[in-house]
Amino acid sequence: MAEPVVIEDDAFIGARSMIYSGARVGEGALLGAGSLLTDTIPVIDAATGQELSRGMIPPWTVAVPAHRSRDFTGGTFGLPCMLVIKHLKKGERHDKAKLNDAVRAQPPARPTL
Image 1 (cartoon, one colour):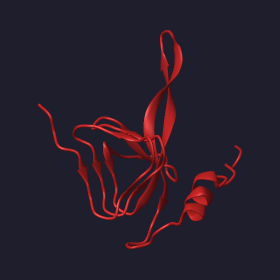
Image 2: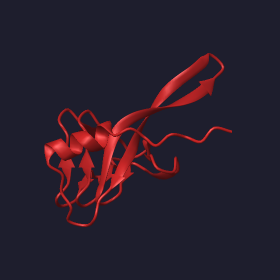
Image 3: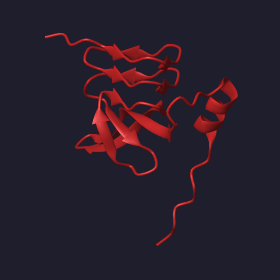
Image 4: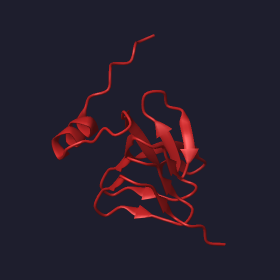
């Protein structure tokens, strides 16, 4: 059964994005260009690596398309996910330069063991 797509107020959807049945984009969220969002796509927080939801971009976040590696008998393959790279303050907006900076920011170095 088809579920509605919900895109809340003040959300920004990047060019060539595809949002399918059952997916939800929270208020003020920004999706990077080429995003793929279905009700089963994992949404992962880049800061923690934790899965936040499936098919729901949290309000006031910046999310970009990504892949995560999964091992199968035939090899290791990349499966699509959405990566939340920034949490915004309610009402905060990005101009294009700021969004580009957020997408291209280098992650902090991981400690070596």
